[in-house]
Length: 430
Image (cartoon, rainbow, N blue to C red; front, side):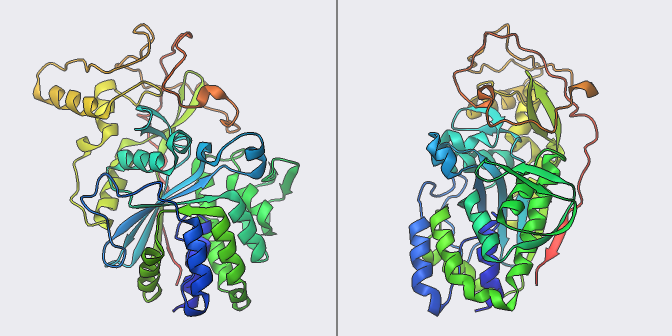
């Protein structure tokens, strides 16, 4: 088996874009033990699949979740199942094109979370229902199946970088961030630097200077840097230690046979990794920041994912975001919505010359309910601070039991302004 590809799979898994695997005769036992230890059937067949996919013959998708978890947070009472996702990447594996497409989804993306029946930041989905809730939220966003999930905590990222002896990276700005243990600070000057695990994590997680898009781009560039470092001839001796790190810090619903089938195919073929991030606009609602996805980009990504998985493409108006925007003129955070009722109301609207008012089960007071006729202009004074921290403000946590005692302020939004679209990055590792 191609040794470089074994490394690629291991390192990309820790960076949230591939599966935890090193498949070979001399590593069979330790690899199988690590995979079995990290196996967790918290999420089974996609609700958008008629039958379970077979990675040895089918195209498939994997949702990679990096959770905001640490021993200190657990000591303070946070359960792993209650952790928010710090990174989220949907990957599609296409056998014919020999391509893995990576779609970065910013953590603050306004998304429908089926487990609580409302729109909220997609980072909250995992805290509301674990990997299954996150997978369902992504499925609702793009109307494509999520076949598998891989969840990795940030400790794994730190350990793997340190195990490799650090990675060389062009730091785009001066860094002054907390350590992974939230004790002390990490300070790095701008420029090309050799980063250890804590420094690499601080750079990957930094939100104090640029946007979520810049943050996602850095994370993907760091993945490439890790892959290149893994090609060093002296690195192969560290495989056993890396596999142990994976077993202790990753959870997934891939069986050993699934991973073996994937590794055998992709090791024998040159694979192109294509990267892209979901585009959106800054959106303030009742004093809380959200990342409002651009509808055109949601649909464009949906089409690409359908092509990758060789599924029949749906129309734009089959997407939940489109239907809600049609009914309410925008995505409304924390308003209770039933998916089936939205679909029925949208279809009734199209079938009638008069647009009926959809009868949703909304827990908010009618005087406080957001109007479907929103003014989508925005004043630049409402742009959110880049230093926004949503980990401590309980008002941002999604909950079906909303406090409606405060006056609802109709948000101004720049959805109609032209969003800056990043160019798609094609990275041929081989």
